[in-house]
Length: 301
Image 1 (cartoon, rainbow, N blue to C red):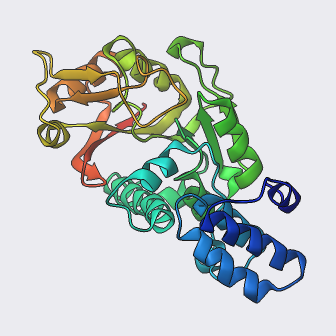
Image 2 (cartoon, rainbow, N blue to C red):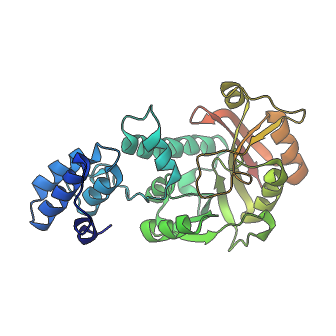
Image 3 (tube, rainbow, N blue to C red):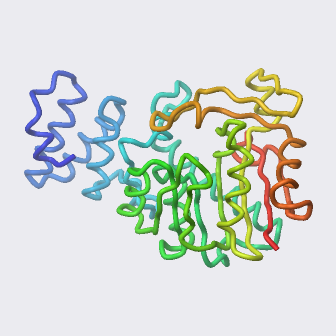
């Protein structure tokens, strides 16, 4: 949102909106120090958090996360993951938690790839599939450079946001797995927390289709809600080792196609054997991502 559009709004009624309005006025007057102080206060209020954050980042004011981290720290208002942090009662600093979560994911992926002797920093081309609005993408770009990163998501606005904000290549995914067209093959395809949301009708199909995205000798890394997550949420798996509920943090995707799924280790290994072959699984690390999701690494011959 531009400063002009903020000023043209009706007179703000809340103290938080008044702070935001004052910060915009100070910016127009060239008072960067005063604006930084006022907008920092507006950033502490959830009602105006994201708008105040955007202004601080846009103008590189004191308190900018970009200045502190070297990341591109713009956040889309449509980012469901940020919305999850912003509304969660345990998150006392949603911005810091959101950025730290992406950094933690990067460190956990680095460890996973070291275990199979394919360091991330030596990987020529990476596809982040089901990438959302860039919670992790911004960290991947800092590590590899935008020219080595491609993103894909079923939400058009998410892909466009990533292209414009991070400079990566991107393409739309699809609700029907077999409809996805891969622009090329990639040395690493990273699929974080997609299989933890898929219904039984598409779970195995996505695993099969993703085989086509991986270059010969390349890796597919994906995560699932395993037994720890199932026990934590008091979920009872069926005889195959699967459970699905049509509910998730996403507001952009139909809950019947993107809900919350739990799988046993045996279920996952059997599906890998059916779709990629018995020799594809080269590494697994249970309770790996966020101390909550299991990780699987497959290699394409």
